[in-house]
Amino acid sequence: MPHLLIAGCGAAGMYAAVHAARRGCRVTVLDGNDRPGHKLSITGKGRCNVTNDCDLDTFLQNVPRNPRFLYSALSRCMPADVQAFFEAEGVPLKTERGRRVFPQSDRAQDIVSALLKAMQDAGVTVHLNSRVKKLILSDNSCTGVILSDGSELRADAVLLATGGMSYPRTGSRGDGYRLAEQAGLTVIPPQPSLIPLETAESDAAEMQGLSLRNVTLTVTQGKKTVFTELGEMLFTHFGISGPLVLSASCRMDPQKLDSYLLNIDMKPALTPEQLDARMLRDFAAQQNKDIVNALRGLLPASMIPVMLNRTDIPQTQKIHDITKAQRMTLGSCIKGFALHASAMRPVTEAIVTRGGVSVKEINPNTMESKKIRGLYIAGELLDVDAYTGGYNLQIAFATGYAAALAAAEQDPA
Ligand SMILES: Cc1cc2nc3c(=O)[nH]c(=O)nc-3n(C[C@H](O)[C@H](O)[C@H](O)COP(=O)(O)OP(=O)(O)OC[C@H]3O[C@@H](n4cnc5c(N)ncnc54)[C@H](O)[C@@H]3O)c2cc1C
Image (cartoon, rainbow, N blue to C red; front, side, top):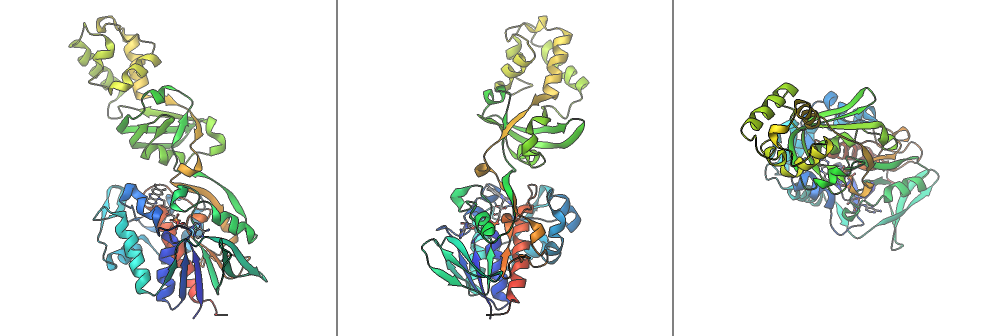
């Protein structure tokens, strides 16, 4: 029976371990951390959006970089298969808005526990606090690993499932990129994706802590709209964050940030005319008030001074003195609050790392390196990443599964 060493006890590594062991492989999983599946346990704000219950075409449309590479792996491990796996392991699931799948318990830890139990049942050995430092390579084959304490472990195949380089406290510190490079594999420089944005305008910070629901964020580049969606976002001390911003960032080129214009429509349900009629109605009842106090029904308190500042309307101007032109300018600012991204936050704060091991050098059916026999790559370490919605975990499971099936057929030494 072939012996498979898996570096990384995360989503890809655990899913691969179960399926390789169930196919008769002897499987040893090594993790540098003391907590298996740490990142998985914090996914989906602790609820784990474990997959997206969609078909293959829809799935691939949600993968902005190298979607075709995933075709084969996903064909054999679809979201429905992952759902069936967890249900069979005793984790009932539910599907929410946008076909996002979560455990019914809303506990990400249930997903981690199910994987650990399935690994144990399948006879997988796990070594925690075992950080892989080097690959053992000879004759274009990978035959084992060297740990940071110097110990050597030999195997018929090695799967690198060490994740990206975001949230390093969960164990993903970018080791996999260095290990892949050691084996001569090309690594596309890792960069943040699904990441909060710093803004050039300092008034975003004046609203820090303000969370908005049902606003539309539109990102344009010249005449091209690269993103437009209704949802939730948040102002922070550095700029903007929240689900809408993370999704938008994934469509933006980090090298060309200054070419984008971000526009927030604070009242997407109202046309400009309806918004003006609403203001007229609100103002009619508050003729003698300062405008700063008269906008409370329309805008959150911390946004009012910012809006007035941007439109050059003095906060103490009485409502009866507000001109039609001022109202129009205010309306335009409410429906088109413009921001520019000055920087993405550091990759350590990203939900996902974009870039990674070039998929041109990986067999899409098996996840084996085309250069080094017996070396497999799965999960976020690969140069594929997706939008939010459970797609990134599904990619980790599907690529882990493909590697497991292939490694289980590897000839024992
Ligand atoms: C806050 C947050 C929320 C998220 N929410 C979701 C969500 O709801 N849905 C979704 O689809 N995606 C989500 N993601 C993305 C998803 O978690 C990752 O894409 C996924 O975990 C990648 O799986 P992986 O197995 O490749 O890597 P990881 O899960 O990061 O696992 C890698 C493992 O390798 C270990 N390791 C690293 N280096 C070494 C080494 N040298 N030797 C041994 N072990 C090593 C690490 O300790 C770690 O356990 C979220 C990410 C974050 C940060």
